[in-house]
Amino acid sequence: MAAEKRPASNAFGTSQLVVKRQKSNVNLSDGKAVAITNGNAADGALVQAIHQYVQFLSQVLAQTHRLLRNPVLWRTYGQCDNFGILTGHRGAVLDLQWSRDSRILFSASADTTVASWDLETGLRIRRHEGHEEVINCLDVSRRGEEILVSGSDDGYICIWDPRQKRSIDDVDTGFPITSVIIAEAGHELYTGGIDNDIKVWDLRKQSVVYTMAGHADTVTSLQQSPDTQTLLSYSHDGTARTWDIRPFAPADRQIKAYTGAPPGLEKNLVRASWNSKGDRIAAGSGDGTAVVWDAPSGKLLYKLPGHRGTVNDVRFAPGDEPISKSLNSYMIRLLANDRVSRFWFLGPEPHLGRARELNIKARR
Image 1 (cartoon, rainbow, N blue to C red):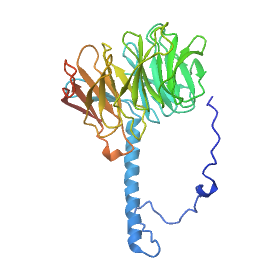
Image 2: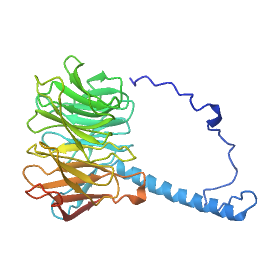
Image 3: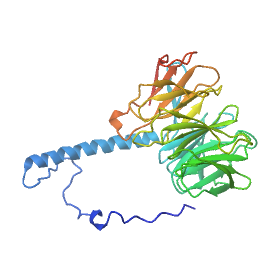
Image 4: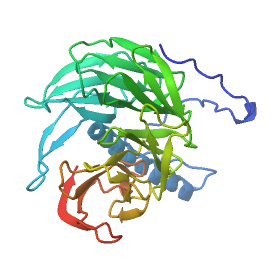
Protein backbone atom coordinates (compact mmCIF):
# COMPACT_ATOMS: atom_id res chain seq x y z
CA MET A 1 0.00 0.00 0.00
CA ALA A 2 2.98 2.29 0.37
CA ALA A 3 3.51 4.99 -2.22
CA GLU A 4 6.05 4.22 -4.93
CA LYS A 5 9.57 4.97 -3.80
CA ARG A 6 11.64 7.45 -5.76
CA PRO A 7 14.81 6.08 -7.38
CA ALA A 8 18.07 6.86 -5.62
CA SER A 9 19.91 9.85 -7.00
CA ASN A 10 23.37 9.34 -8.51
CA ALA A 11 24.26 13.00 -8.29
CA PHE A 12 26.90 12.33 -5.65
CA GLY A 13 28.82 9.83 -7.74
CA THR A 14 30.45 6.64 -6.53
CA SER A 15 33.37 8.36 -4.83
CA GLN A 16 31.19 9.29 -1.85
CA LEU A 17 29.56 5.93 -1.26
CA VAL A 18 29.85 4.57 2.27
CA VAL A 19 32.16 1.51 2.42
CA LYS A 20 31.65 -1.01 5.20
CA ARG A 21 34.89 -1.69 7.04
CA GLN A 22 36.02 -5.02 8.38
CA LYS A 23 34.81 -5.64 11.93
CA SER A 24 37.46 -5.08 14.57
CA ASN A 25 38.30 -7.69 17.20
CA VAL A 26 38.76 -5.02 19.85
CA ASN A 27 36.10 -5.11 22.56
CA LEU A 28 34.69 -1.61 22.96
CA SER A 29 31.76 -2.57 25.15
CA ASP A 30 33.74 -2.30 28.37
CA GLY A 31 34.72 1.30 27.66
CA LYS A 32 38.39 0.53 28.39
CA ALA A 33 39.77 0.09 24.89
CA VAL A 34 42.13 2.83 23.74
CA ALA A 35 42.68 3.40 20.04
CA ILE A 36 46.19 4.47 18.97
CA THR A 37 46.23 6.62 15.84
CA ASN A 38 49.57 7.00 14.03
CA GLY A 39 51.31 5.86 17.19
CA ASN A 40 50.10 8.89 19.16
CA ALA A 41 48.70 7.91 22.57
CA ALA A 42 47.13 11.37 23.04
CA ASP A 43 44.97 10.84 19.97
CA GLY A 44 44.01 7.42 21.31
CA ALA A 45 42.90 8.93 24.60
CA LEU A 46 40.76 11.38 22.68
CA VAL A 47 39.09 8.52 20.80
CA GLN A 48 38.42 6.80 24.14
CA ALA A 49 36.79 9.94 25.52
CA ILE A 50 34.63 10.26 22.40
CA HIS A 51 33.61 6.61 22.69
CA GLN A 52 32.54 7.12 26.31
CA TYR A 53 30.56 10.22 25.32
CA VAL A 54 28.80 8.27 22.54
CA GLN A 55 27.92 5.57 25.07
CA PHE A 56 26.40 8.25 27.33
CA LEU A 57 24.37 9.73 24.45
CA SER A 58 23.15 6.26 23.50
CA GLN A 59 21.80 5.77 27.02
CA VAL A 60 20.05 9.16 26.94
CA LEU A 61 18.59 8.44 23.50
CA ALA A 62 17.28 5.07 24.66
CA GLN A 63 15.63 6.65 27.71
CA THR A 64 14.13 9.49 25.67
CA HIS A 65 12.79 7.11 23.03
CA ARG A 66 11.07 5.16 25.81
CA LEU A 67 9.46 8.35 27.10
CA LEU A 68 8.44 9.59 23.67
CA ARG A 69 6.46 6.47 22.87
CA ASN A 70 4.45 6.49 26.14
CA PRO A 71 1.67 9.11 26.39
CA VAL A 72 1.67 10.68 29.86
CA LEU A 73 -1.50 11.87 31.65
CA TRP A 74 -1.35 14.99 33.85
CA ARG A 75 -3.79 16.78 36.10
CA THR A 76 -4.18 20.34 34.83
CA TYR A 77 -4.93 21.86 38.22
CA GLY A 78 -3.16 21.88 41.56
CA GLN A 79 0.39 20.58 41.34
CA CYS A 80 -0.06 19.21 37.81
CA ASP A 81 0.92 15.75 38.99
CA ASN A 82 1.30 12.80 36.64
CA PHE A 83 -1.34 10.11 37.26
CA GLY A 84 -0.82 7.74 34.35
CA ILE A 85 1.53 6.50 31.63
CA LEU A 86 0.13 4.61 28.63
CA THR A 87 2.60 1.96 27.49
CA GLY A 88 2.39 -0.12 24.33
CA HIS A 89 3.71 1.82 21.34
CA ARG A 90 7.09 0.82 19.91
CA GLY A 91 7.74 4.20 18.29
CA ALA A 92 7.31 7.89 19.07
CA VAL A 93 3.73 9.14 19.50
CA LEU A 94 3.15 11.99 17.03
CA ASP A 95 -0.51 12.87 17.62
CA LEU A 96 -3.22 12.42 20.24
CA GLN A 97 -6.99 12.89 20.05
CA TRP A 98 -9.79 12.47 22.58
CA SER A 99 -12.99 10.55 21.91
CA ARG A 100 -16.20 12.56 22.07
CA ASP A 101 -17.02 11.38 25.58
CA SER A 102 -13.38 11.90 26.73
CA ARG A 103 -13.21 8.34 28.04
CA ILE A 104 -10.88 7.08 25.30
CA LEU A 105 -7.61 8.51 24.00
CA PHE A 106 -6.45 7.77 20.45
CA SER A 107 -2.76 7.92 19.55
CA ALA A 108 -0.86 7.90 16.25
CA SER A 109 2.66 6.55 16.31
CA ALA A 110 5.83 6.16 14.28
CA ASP A 111 5.43 2.39 14.78
CA THR A 112 2.79 2.58 11.94
CA THR A 113 -0.18 1.93 14.25
CA VAL A 114 -3.07 3.82 15.81
CA ALA A 115 -4.01 2.83 19.36
CA SER A 116 -7.08 3.42 21.51
CA TRP A 117 -6.71 3.65 25.30
CA ASP A 118 -9.16 3.29 28.17
CA LEU A 119 -8.43 6.27 30.42
CA GLU A 120 -10.07 4.71 33.47
CA THR A 121 -7.83 1.65 33.50
CA GLY A 122 -4.85 2.96 31.47
CA LEU A 123 -4.99 -0.15 29.29
CA ARG A 124 -4.83 -0.30 25.51
CA ILE A 125 -8.20 -1.25 24.06
CA ARG A 126 -7.11 -1.93 20.52
CA ARG A 127 -4.12 -1.66 18.20
CA HIS A 128 -5.29 -0.46 14.78
CA GLU A 129 -3.19 -1.63 11.84
CA GLY A 130 -3.25 -0.54 8.20
CA HIS A 131 -0.46 1.95 7.50
CA GLU A 132 2.97 0.87 6.33
CA GLU A 133 5.00 3.89 7.43
CA VAL A 134 5.11 6.58 10.14
CA ILE A 135 1.68 7.98 11.08
CA ASN A 136 1.98 11.76 11.45
CA CYS A 137 -1.55 12.92 12.24
CA LEU A 138 -4.96 11.84 13.47
CA ASP A 139 -8.45 13.30 13.84
CA VAL A 140 -11.88 12.25 15.16
CA SER A 141 -15.23 13.05 13.53
CA ARG A 142 -17.46 15.48 15.42
CA ARG A 143 -20.86 14.44 14.05
CA GLY A 144 -22.58 11.23 13.07
CA GLU A 145 -20.91 7.91 13.73
CA GLU A 146 -17.54 8.32 15.43
CA ILE A 147 -14.73 7.56 13.00
CA LEU A 148 -10.99 8.23 12.95
CA VAL A 149 -8.84 9.40 10.05
CA SER A 150 -5.06 9.23 9.96
CA GLY A 151 -2.33 10.46 7.59
CA SER A 152 0.99 8.76 7.04
CA ASP A 153 4.31 8.94 5.24
CA ASP A 154 3.04 6.09 3.06
CA GLY A 155 0.82 8.64 1.27
CA TYR A 156 -2.45 7.10 2.44
CA ILE A 157 -5.34 8.46 4.46
CA CYS A 158 -6.82 5.61 6.50
CA ILE A 159 -10.39 5.69 7.82
CA TRP A 160 -11.07 3.73 10.99
CA ASP A 161 -14.01 2.45 12.97
CA PRO A 162 -12.66 2.54 16.56
CA ARG A 163 -14.37 -0.81 17.21
CA GLN A 164 -12.35 -2.57 14.53
CA LYS A 165 -8.66 -3.42 14.30
CA ARG A 166 -8.21 -2.88 10.56
CA SER A 167 -9.01 0.30 8.63
CA ILE A 168 -12.42 0.29 6.92
CA ASP A 169 -11.20 2.34 3.94
CA ASP A 170 -8.17 4.21 2.63
CA VAL A 171 -7.37 6.94 0.11
CA ASP A 172 -4.13 7.11 -1.88
CA THR A 173 -3.01 10.75 -2.05
CA GLY A 174 0.35 10.20 -3.74
CA PHE A 175 2.27 12.27 -1.15
CA PRO A 176 3.18 11.80 2.53
CA ILE A 177 0.47 13.36 4.72
CA THR A 178 1.52 15.50 7.70
CA SER A 179 -1.78 17.06 8.77
CA VAL A 180 -5.43 16.00 8.57
CA ILE A 181 -8.77 17.18 9.93
CA ILE A 182 -12.38 16.12 9.36
CA ALA A 183 -14.80 18.94 8.53
CA GLU A 184 -17.52 19.69 11.07
CA ALA A 185 -20.22 18.29 8.77
CA GLY A 186 -18.30 15.03 8.49
CA HIS A 187 -18.31 14.43 4.73
CA GLU A 188 -15.23 16.49 3.85
CA LEU A 189 -11.61 16.06 4.82
CA TYR A 190 -8.74 18.58 4.81
CA THR A 191 -5.18 17.34 4.34
CA GLY A 192 -1.73 18.91 4.15
CA GLY A 193 1.52 17.29 3.14
CA ILE A 194 4.92 17.68 1.54
CA ASP A 195 3.45 19.04 -1.71
CA ASN A 196 2.76 22.32 0.19
CA ASP A 197 -0.93 22.43 -0.77
CA ILE A 198 -4.08 21.98 1.30
CA LYS A 199 -6.51 19.58 -0.33
CA VAL A 200 -10.21 19.26 0.40
CA TRP A 201 -11.54 15.73 -0.12
CA ASP A 202 -15.09 14.45 -0.56
CA LEU A 203 -15.06 11.31 1.57
CA ARG A 204 -18.06 9.86 -0.24
CA LYS A 205 -16.38 10.06 -3.66
CA GLN A 206 -12.78 9.86 -2.35
CA SER A 207 -11.78 12.68 -4.69
CA VAL A 208 -10.34 16.18 -4.33
CA VAL A 209 -13.02 18.91 -4.38
CA TYR A 210 -10.59 21.83 -4.49
CA THR A 211 -7.03 22.77 -3.54
CA MET A 212 -5.77 25.77 -1.59
CA ALA A 213 -2.26 26.86 -2.57
CA GLY A 214 -0.13 29.47 -0.87
CA HIS A 215 2.30 27.78 1.49
CA ALA A 216 5.88 27.33 0.26
CA ASP A 217 6.75 24.27 2.36
CA THR A 218 5.25 21.25 4.12
CA VAL A 219 1.91 21.91 5.85
CA THR A 220 2.16 20.50 9.39
CA SER A 221 -1.06 21.68 11.04
CA LEU A 222 -4.73 22.20 10.18
CA GLN A 223 -7.56 23.27 12.47
CA GLN A 224 -11.08 24.50 11.83
CA SER A 225 -12.31 27.67 13.54
CA PRO A 226 -15.03 27.45 16.22
CA ASP A 227 -17.62 28.82 13.76
CA THR A 228 -16.46 26.26 11.11
CA GLN A 229 -16.08 29.01 8.49
CA THR A 230 -12.28 29.32 8.50
CA LEU A 231 -9.37 26.89 8.36
CA LEU A 232 -6.07 27.58 10.14
CA SER A 233 -2.84 26.12 8.79
CA TYR A 234 0.85 26.18 9.74
CA SER A 235 3.76 25.30 7.47
CA HIS A 236 7.51 24.84 7.48
CA ASP A 237 7.66 28.09 5.51
CA GLY A 238 7.29 29.75 8.93
CA THR A 239 3.80 31.14 8.41
CA ALA A 240 0.35 30.41 9.79
CA ARG A 241 -2.48 31.16 7.37
CA THR A 242 -6.26 31.35 7.46
CA TRP A 243 -8.54 30.18 4.64
CA ASP A 244 -12.19 30.75 3.77
CA ILE A 245 -13.82 27.30 3.60
CA ARG A 246 -17.43 28.37 3.12
CA PRO A 247 -19.14 26.52 0.24
CA PHE A 248 -19.39 29.52 -2.10
CA ALA A 249 -16.21 31.39 -1.23
CA PRO A 250 -14.09 33.11 -3.92
CA ALA A 251 -11.53 31.06 -5.83
CA ASP A 252 -8.69 32.67 -3.87
CA ARG A 253 -9.62 31.44 -0.41
CA GLN A 254 -6.60 32.72 1.55
CA ILE A 255 -7.60 35.35 4.12
CA LYS A 256 -4.43 36.28 6.00
CA ALA A 257 -0.83 35.17 6.63
CA TYR A 258 0.79 35.38 10.09
CA THR A 259 4.57 35.57 10.56
CA GLY A 260 6.84 35.32 13.58
CA ALA A 261 6.95 31.58 14.27
CA PRO A 262 9.95 30.08 12.44
CA PRO A 263 10.00 26.25 12.17
CA GLY A 264 13.63 25.86 13.25
CA LEU A 265 16.33 23.64 11.81
CA GLU A 266 14.70 20.45 13.08
CA LYS A 267 11.53 20.99 10.99
CA ASN A 268 9.29 19.30 13.57
CA LEU A 269 5.55 18.82 13.06
CA VAL A 270 4.64 22.15 14.69
CA ARG A 271 0.91 22.62 15.42
CA ALA A 272 -1.33 25.69 15.61
CA SER A 273 -4.71 26.27 17.27
CA TRP A 274 -7.66 28.66 17.76
CA ASN A 275 -9.02 29.96 21.04
CA SER A 276 -12.65 29.22 21.89
CA LYS A 277 -13.89 32.56 20.53
CA GLY A 278 -12.00 32.35 17.25
CA ASP A 279 -10.38 35.76 17.67
CA ARG A 280 -6.87 34.55 18.54
CA ILE A 281 -4.60 31.92 17.08
CA ALA A 282 -1.40 30.41 18.43
CA ALA A 283 1.42 28.27 17.10
CA GLY A 284 4.58 26.63 18.33
CA SER A 285 7.93 27.75 17.05
CA GLY A 286 11.44 26.53 16.42
CA ASP A 287 12.94 29.42 18.41
CA GLY A 288 11.60 28.08 21.72
CA THR A 289 8.61 30.41 21.97
CA ALA A 290 4.85 30.10 21.68
CA VAL A 291 3.39 32.76 19.39
CA VAL A 292 -0.09 34.31 19.71
CA TRP A 293 -1.73 36.53 17.07
CA ASP A 294 -4.93 38.53 16.82
CA ALA A 295 -6.83 36.59 14.16
CA PRO A 296 -8.77 39.44 12.44
CA SER A 297 -5.87 41.92 12.17
CA GLY A 298 -2.90 39.54 11.99
CA LYS A 299 -1.09 41.49 14.72
CA LEU A 300 1.45 39.53 16.74
CA LEU A 301 0.32 39.80 20.36
CA TYR A 302 2.70 37.60 22.34
CA LYS A 303 6.01 35.78 22.01
CA LEU A 304 5.97 33.58 25.10
CA PRO A 305 9.54 32.53 26.02
CA GLY A 306 10.98 30.02 28.44
CA HIS A 307 11.57 26.81 26.49
CA ARG A 308 14.99 25.74 25.29
CA GLY A 309 13.77 23.65 22.38
CA THR A 310 11.17 23.66 19.62
CA VAL A 311 7.62 24.21 20.89
CA ASN A 312 5.62 21.58 19.01
CA ASP A 313 2.11 22.40 20.14
CA VAL A 314 0.14 25.23 21.75
CA ARG A 315 -3.41 24.95 23.05
CA PHE A 316 -5.76 27.47 24.63
CA ALA A 317 -7.65 26.41 27.73
CA PRO A 318 -11.29 25.51 26.94
CA GLY A 319 -14.04 28.02 27.54
CA ASP A 320 -13.15 31.59 28.41
CA GLU A 321 -10.21 30.87 30.71
CA PRO A 322 -7.36 33.15 29.52
CA ILE A 323 -4.66 30.51 29.73
CA SER A 324 -2.52 29.11 26.93
CA LYS A 325 -0.53 25.91 27.33
CA SER A 326 2.50 25.04 25.26
CA LEU A 327 4.10 21.62 24.89
CA ASN A 328 7.84 21.49 24.42
CA SER A 329 9.04 18.58 22.29
CA TYR A 330 11.97 16.30 22.96
CA MET A 331 14.86 17.47 20.87
CA ILE A 332 17.70 15.93 18.98
CA ARG A 333 19.87 18.24 21.08
CA LEU A 334 18.79 16.47 24.26
CA LEU A 335 20.90 18.44 26.70
CA ALA A 336 19.29 21.70 25.58
CA ASN A 337 15.75 20.45 26.15
CA ASP A 338 13.92 21.52 29.33
CA ARG A 339 11.13 18.91 28.96
CA VAL A 340 8.61 21.21 30.64
CA SER A 341 4.99 22.15 29.88
CA ARG A 342 4.41 25.81 30.68
CA PHE A 343 1.25 27.79 31.35
CA TRP A 344 0.63 31.51 30.73
CA PHE A 345 -2.02 33.93 31.85
CA LEU A 346 -2.62 36.08 28.76
CA GLY A 347 -4.80 38.69 30.41
CA PRO A 348 -7.97 40.37 29.13
CA GLU A 349 -6.20 42.90 26.89
CA PRO A 350 -4.07 41.85 23.90
CA HIS A 351 -1.05 44.08 24.52
CA LEU A 352 2.39 42.78 23.62
CA GLY A 353 4.39 41.89 26.71
CA ARG A 354 1.41 41.65 29.08
CA ALA A 355 1.51 37.85 29.33
CA ARG A 356 2.43 36.40 32.72
CA GLU A 357 3.75 32.90 33.18
CA LEU A 358 2.01 30.97 35.94
CA ASN A 359 4.15 29.24 38.52
CA ILE A 360 3.06 25.80 37.29
CA LYS A 361 5.42 23.63 35.28
CA ALA A 362 4.51 20.05 34.44
CA ARG A 363 7.90 18.37 34.10
CA ARG A 364 8.00 15.19 31.98
